[in-house]
Amino acid sequence: MTDARILPGPRRARWWGPLAVAAVLVLLTGGWPLIDSWISGDKRVRAGTVFRVGPDDDHRAWFRVGAGWILDRAATAPSRLFVLRHGDVDLSVAYISLPRTENADALWTGLRDTLRVGDRHARLGVPGPLVAHAGARGMVGTVARDGDTGQAVIYPGPEDAFAIRLIALAPAATADPQWAQVADVLRSLTFTEEAA
Image (cartoon, rainbow, N blue to C red; front, side, top):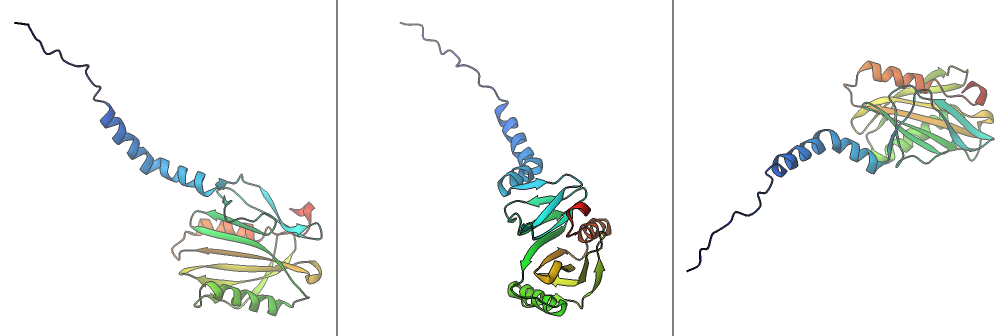
């Protein structure tokens, strides 16, 4: 008769289970926003960054952002459209080519019509004057779209050959400090590179 003994197999480490749970928790709490930003192409923008919007040297403007802005690279079309975010505020800055000289009223009416394409209930307030830090003259008014509220700005370019349109939207309860950052960007627009 043979003496058969059952020898224990190698002990498996029991730390894999808790490690897997910890990894999932880290992914869901802190890692997921980071992964989302990699996938979506979001990029944190350094304070003081100047963006040029416009297709060429004769048709362009510049604007500057402060601290805390994030560029949505997937939605941005460099030189034509920039989409940025600061907290809950979404800001788009777009170059608008004008086929003929437009007066200010026509630009504002065109913006109202454009906003209603995506949301037939969108509202655009009566425009008032706005002067940028470097002296560019534009129009500003309230805007409401898709449940968000904010401001819309149009700066007619030199010789009215083009315009720059800025729209900032956020949920109604958005804090005032975020709007202060937006106001700085809206007033930073200039058609002179030296003033950017």
